[in-house]
Amino acid sequence: MARHPSSGLTPLELDIMKVLWREGPASVQTVQEGLGPRRKLAYNTVQTMLNILWRKGKVRRKQHDRAYHYAPLLTRVRAIREAVGDLVHRLFEGSPEDLVMSLIETRQLTPERIERLAALFEERKGGSREEP
Image (cartoon, rainbow, N blue to C red; front, side, top):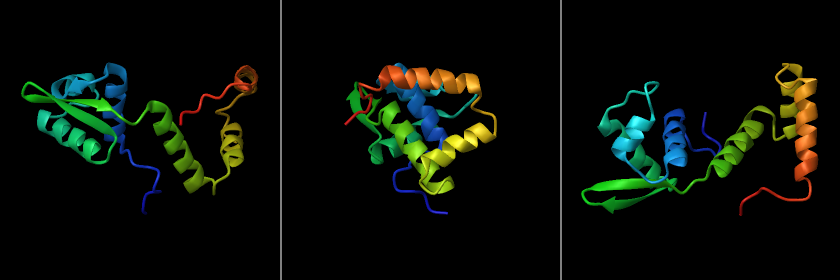
């Protein structure tokens, strides 16, 4: 199945982006170490993945001495927006209401959580957290 055009991060790419969001500009070695014990990858694999992200326009790179340092161009907020949009598009035929109802029906959204979400929604109603 073809990917929705707004999607674009594989699970490994997302893990690498999480390291960059947490660490800021980082060398291949820093990213490799930042992936931790959950993802033990060879240096060359991490370097290849960072270069793929660079070609996709998700990160920028700048040479420091003999090594590149990579920094995220894709923000966490935009990545979440794209992933949720893709999920809603593919599984819920574009209906965010159906997504919420699915969360309620599967008991992932309890009445307590809905109350907390309603309070957060009221707090943020006046201001927008969206990025350009």
